[in-house]
Length: 233
Length: 233
DNA sequence: ACAAAAGTGTTCGACATACACCCATGG
DNA sequence: CCATGGGTGTATGTCGAACACTTTTGT
Image 1: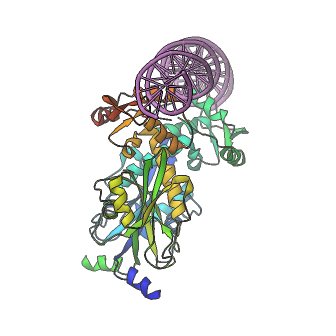
Image 2 (image 1 turned 180 degrees about the vertical axis):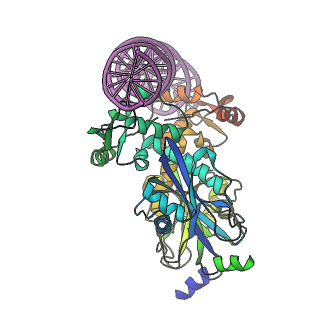
């Protein structure tokens, strides 16, 4: 039996497995992506997604969380698998497949410091530079998945601060879908789901000020269980 | 530079990369899945998806096509990546991540012979046996993706013979969504897309006989380009 | 007082759903 | 002649899309 096992696995090829993180953030009404300068040859100094090799005893998801924590200092970030990239010669160095995972994080000044220390930069999603290897493709694919997911799940809330205004939320959806939405219809729909809690405070960055809301995770979980369809667009 | 490269890759862990195929077929109004008896330890003799290790110089997609051709004799099968499974200890043998890909094929007698030669079996989707490792999960995930995809793309046609009747198509969608559809509404919707060509012939397995149709790939491509939404349910 | 963004309802059209009967044929 | 599955049209409701004006307040 141990013999069988050896026979079966031994002649097979091993290869590197990496994970690359597509890190989305939202700021100033813009969807942004965190990229950084590659620190190793080949292609040293080029813009790249951040990633890492997966260790022999490490879940692929854990590898991505590890990387993310190193860069941003944040734990338990919302993250989801996008897809894998397995072309034989996608990496000119060695054979290496990559599992792309996308993350949604709240941009704030604390994160920014950490990020800058690692030579990283937040780019607006439609002003991305050329990235190494197949990383531009990875971003495109992840953005598609994000759009798709946002149709059915209130995913956007991961990208906003805890308290946010309806106009901010609308800006976010406009940034994801890259098209303008009608303010009245948007407000109507988003409130109809009953997963937003209106607070007493106002955000006063505009003249008039807009009421702040927070997301009601509890109610949302209940809705999900009852087979709810959370479409938004 | 070559030194840099070595430093960077050398200390990293290599592992096995496999691909597992979730092979859907359609027959007798039933959505079916092709599974087979595992021929190697551990878990020899248990039901399993069919898969293979990816070779060092082989695209992951190519590995899946290779496996599929070995078993069914078919080339260029419709196949799409489902997701990857990367838990550290998912395979009790060695560290091995797997890229799951699902395929849609037309079941016919020719295939069946080849398939039986490999100890494989077509199971109805809701009567699956226990499969090894995380393979039941893989099937569930792939079925979700299939449902999702079927909403927006006329994916079902991959599972039917070239010529098919509207009732057959309806049965297929009923099998995928696992719910009954209204015949009049279904016919109306599916014809409204103008991608079916009605033939003169009839399928005569029923008393009255139903007109055969074929899928108009050309028109469909045009529709897709013009940003068409092909929802069906 | 005016500029700038927040907030608020109604109408219209499109599309999904529900629903029942006649038709063609083989046995 | 009857059992079986194929084929057809209409009425109703729901939901998304379009649309304009008033409110608040900082400058």
